[in-house]
Structure formats: C-alpha cells, structure tokens
Length: 313
Image (cartoon, rainbow, N blue to C red; front, top):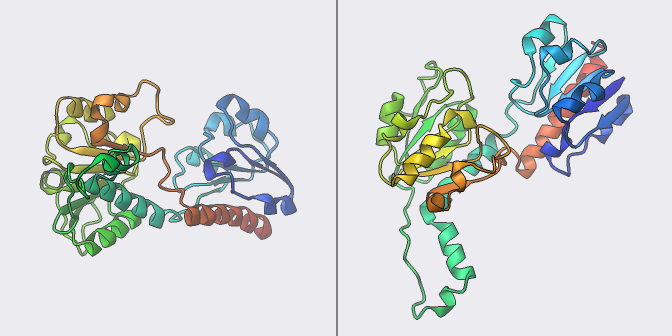
C-alpha cells in the first residue's frame, strides 16, 4: 500500500502523519507543484492533498488509486464526479475549523474597532514616551455593543459568529446565499438590505457560481460609512479590485480578509497600496489553522485513511 501526502506544509510544521507508516509505504512532501504531481502519485494507492489539484486528466493516469483524502473541508480541487465513476471515494474533514474561523472573525472585528495596530505602533515607536499626557485618544474606538452585525452565509461558522457577536451585544441579522436557510433564530433579510443596514458584515459562504463576485462595486457602495467588511469565506466572493478602487477614492469602510482570489498574494496586488493601509486588515489564509483546529484536521485525515484500510474497501 503506497500512501502519498502531497502538501503537508499547508498544515504546519507540527503536522504528524507518521502513524500512517504502520499501514504501508508512506511518502510525504512539503509542497507539490503541478509539474511534480504525476511522478509522485503515479503508483499511489491513497493520496492525501490539501491544495494540489487532482483533475480527471491526472486521475485517469493512476490505475492503482483507491482513495483520495482531502485534508480540508472543500473538495473542489478534486474531480469528484470522475473519481466516483472510477469507484474512488473522496473523503474530507468537515467542521474542524468552525471555532478557529469564528474566533478569527471576531479578532478582525475587534482589531479594527479598537484601532489596535495604530495604538500598538504609537507605543512601540516611542511616541507614548514623548507624551505629556498619560493617554492618547487620537483614533476613534467603537464598541461592538449595539452595532448591527450582518452575516453572509449561515452555516456552522456563520452561526458560531452570530453567537459570539450576540454575546458582545451586537444585533445580528443574516442572509442565506443558498436561499434555503431562512428559519434561524435571527432576522433574515436580502443581501442589499443587510449591506445597507449593518455596521459589520462578515462573509462565511462557500465559493459557488452563485457567490462568485457576489460583493462587487455596486454592493460595496451600499455599505455604511465606517462599516467593516470581513471576508473569511473565499477570496473570489469579493471583487478585490473594486474594494481597492473605492478605498483609493475615499470610501469610508474598512476591509478585513483572510482569503484572496489568487493565493499567495500577487506582488502587484492593489491591497499593497500604502495609501489605503489604514483601511485594510490582511492575514495570509490562517483562520482555519489555529492550534486545536490543525490537530483535529490532521487526526480526521488520518482517521479517513485508517478507517478505509481497516474496512478492506
């Protein structure tokens, strides 16, 4: 049994899959480029992948393949339909990151509301030590209490964010991107209304044909002055160029995101414009990867392999 793990670096240096050595020959790679993929998996019985694409062209060249384990929730990197036709199960890890993504969302909101980066820099750059006053109240700080928090996508993560935001006193409403999830214990409204009435908007939807480009230039113009838009869903949901253009033109919302349409970030990305940095909060796709979530993800992925082997299927 040959088990190949194509991109363990995406799960952090501490990710330990060594238990799989008990079940066959286990080969692990930090990262795998498209040009390297076929050579590394051509004889594989089981493949683990986080971001390495396994399309039908590749899968057709893998006669021994019996199982694909995606070390993530989304399976869009695999041609699942073709794999199913071949009788190759595709297993994923659902729900492992709900808590960490919700925490990251709250962290982003709190960071922007408190203007924490500004005050941290003020102190560390020595400006506080020059002050005659014990405090420095230059940048406005806002409480979550009483703010309207709109949530786009109300699955497990969106619902957890609603619980956390409500505990801070936010008034939560939501919109269902599928149009089917409309019976939750929070007010449901259409997207335009949610954008226009919310002080904070967080996105927790998957990337689908319906959500691709969902927040475009026209939607951004609906945002209130001083609104905060947070995207921890998928980069393609928000038109990044439109965000940059409107901020460059003086729009008064802030944008926080953990995901971009193209990752890693392009060297010429519009978000690197120094003129709009005070309205941006960027993190490099880390919301899923808090310590406990990563441990859970690795264990779920291992279990998917071990359970398959022990079942004899």
